[in-house]
Length: 191
Image 1: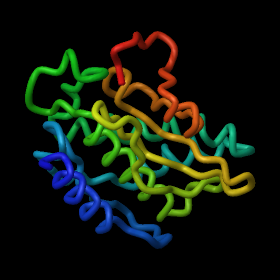
Image 2: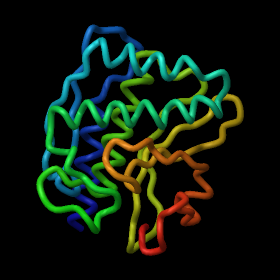
Image 3: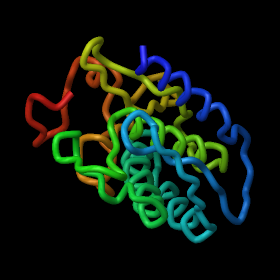
Image 4: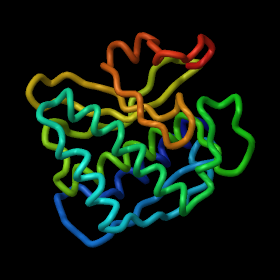
């Protein structure tokens, strides 16, 4: 029940994110941490960050290469958010987490989706649109961000939970992710 209430709150926070293309000098947003979005802090991204992220995304010549660029852009946004909040303390998965700033998959999915929505609102995604957070599993749930390729309608998860803080996001097809596929080097036992 508590997890359901947390997710309702997370969805309410996501609804507050920008939804239209706009170019501003900076943008503020909420970053979640401490498992289940128990802690929420505002971070501000300046124009220099958006210039760097835009440069990454502009290298994409098709949807596949944009997914690689999204992976790196989300990592760059996490690093900047980590300069303003304690999320830099987070470790891959949940097992090595040790206190304030740690993030579970709900925190990661919320933050990743918020980053992606911000990129979309600024018109920086050319081959994908951003969807709602998705989950796999029933008792051992795992959450991630979601993007949809414009041309094919194929859906992909953007998951930052698996690796250490600031590493590129894992982007994989939604069917593979929902089937339990884990990225290379991640042992069984990780969701």
